[in-house]
Amino acid sequence: MKAMRSHPINILENTSRFLILLLLPLLRALIIGRMGFYEWLSGAWFDLLIVALIIALGVYGWYSYTFTINEAGIHIFRGVIVRQSRFLAFGNITAISVESPWYYRPIKAVRLQADTDGGETSQPDFSITVKRELAEMIMEASRTPLIPKSSFFKTYIPRNLYITIFSLLTSNSLTGVLYLWAALSQAEKVFGKPFRNELLNTFTQLAELNSFGLPPVFAIIAYIILGCWLFSFLRNMEQHLRFQTTRYGNALGIQSGLFTIRRYSISVPRINFLTLRQSLFSKLFGITSVFIHCTGYGKKKDELAVLLPSGLNQEIKSNLNLLLPEIPFVKKQIKPKIQNLSRFLIPPLTLCLCVLAAGLLALYFITGFDRPLIFVLVICEIPCLWWLTVKTFAYFHTGIGVSEEAVTIYYTRLYQIISCSIPKDKITKIALQQTLFQIPTKCCDVHIYTWAEGTKRQRVLNMYLPEVLDLLAPEAFFELEKEKEV
Image (cartoon, rainbow, N blue to C red; front, side):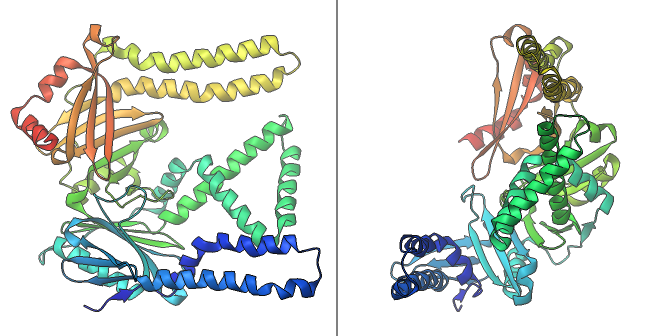
């Protein structure tokens, strides 16, 4: 088959890696800035040479990267003088994605990425910008082995209310800070530094006028956190509007996005585990979000590996039975003993008391700042008390269930309440761990390992050791364990 290249826009994408070379003309301009215009113009050839070099490197990167496609997979070639090649078999692809940013649509270009379990954790195995028709052809070719002729479609489309709830639950201020900083940096490039300074000064004045009796510095911090969270929320909404999940044969199709449309094709046999996540609030209202772990899906920093954004528990259960019946959730068969309740409560109680003690000491030794110190103490104590509440609930939530197909574990991680179902053939190792303090009460931590582009570990804390051994002792299960370890 004839070798193909990426979309010509890839030349501009390649040049972005070499923009640092533009510092050389800038330094020259600064050094000879005191000289006249004609002296500067006489050396302009150097600037033009740097620009030409950047363009040449972009063209070389585009020309030297080719690929061919056949029924078995994608053959990738790189280089001109020293030629390198590798083969990506369709049968080994775990997930393939097509991203269509709004600014690429007029030129009919999309970004295509494909991944396998054996690649790098930070980079996709195959990433290229191509024409929309070629991307559709590659995605269709990768799905063909997974879709028998007799298969039919099963589609789930969540309501916008569930998308909003999901965006509320998954937004955080740290992500908002990163996105907002990037937006301000771009605004500074377009409108200049005075625009950014004026924007920040206006925000500071508004925060001081609406401080609600708080010291201005705390009001500014509160508004920054709230604004960054709102920015993150709006970004999550844009990414997950028009969300839909479709099952056909052994392939799972996911599409989402309002301005930047993302489409994924996921191999169901390559899914490593299925996770239900809740916060304490969503648990009280019976709302659940569903995530999957599959190499290549949710790999980017701004992506979440979501299968069902959110929904009522019964609705989520029926849709999971429709979309992924191969990975069932098993009811808890064992759970922690009452004598181990203290092991759930001692860490958050200790943290609460330490924060309180530090606050009281600060009030005793630092005079004249009572109001700000009390404010800081309350702000620091709230997440500690919330963690204590979650860990109290964790005692009732934690447990393990085993069926012929999967192992289901129930645990909490920080403020998240998690239920995870892992197919037995994806488990590489189960390890039991005891500390000196756990031995007297026959308590242990259960570590379950899976592998895909590296090892993934999940922990179930403070389980009763004899019950764990009885539950996981069936001979067939440990035969599978030994085979995976070998």
